[in-house]
Figure 1 (cartoon, rainbow, N blue to C red):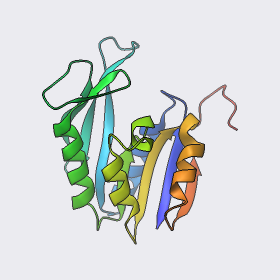
Figure 2: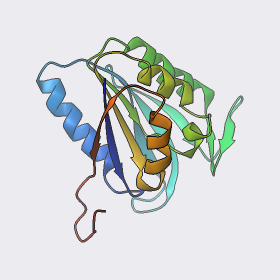
Figure 3: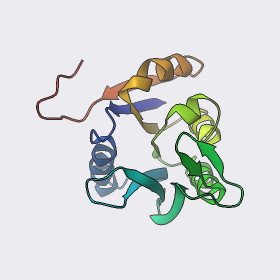
Amino acid sequence: MLVRIITGPVNGGKSTLIRTLLDRELDKGRSTGGFLTIPLREKPEGPKSGFMVELLPGRTVLPIAGSVPKPGSTMVGRFHLYREGLEAALDSVVRGAEADITVLDEIGPAELAGEGHRRALEMALGRRRGEVWISLRETLLDPFLDYLRAYECDILLEQPYVAGRKVR
């Protein structure tokens, strides 16, 4: 199994790169499962106020995190994670188990701590075929690579090009 990691800074183009690459693979007829995230902002250049989750392959969109609590939500960092969105994302990973590509956009501190999309991450990495595409911020790369040691996989590491920024 190939694990394709797209890493970079917060707001560094990771999700945009995944969408671009995914569209190319869909044009080739490859099947997908998993989820993409869509940040929500009250003002165009303002801070993120929450997230929606876009389920693959059908592209259904649901709220997954926000600043307002909902019944059954869990506070992680400055956002409440919504159970309905988390369960739908997990279900999309399970249904996409036989897909060519399973996408998890984005893995963060919650997943490394055993929360958030951790179950979806474990299910995706437990596959024996296909590819798993994961985005995560660059500060989490080393701990995530340590986590991956428990899995038998090849790793492809990519970073979006950001003008004026040195890539390590």
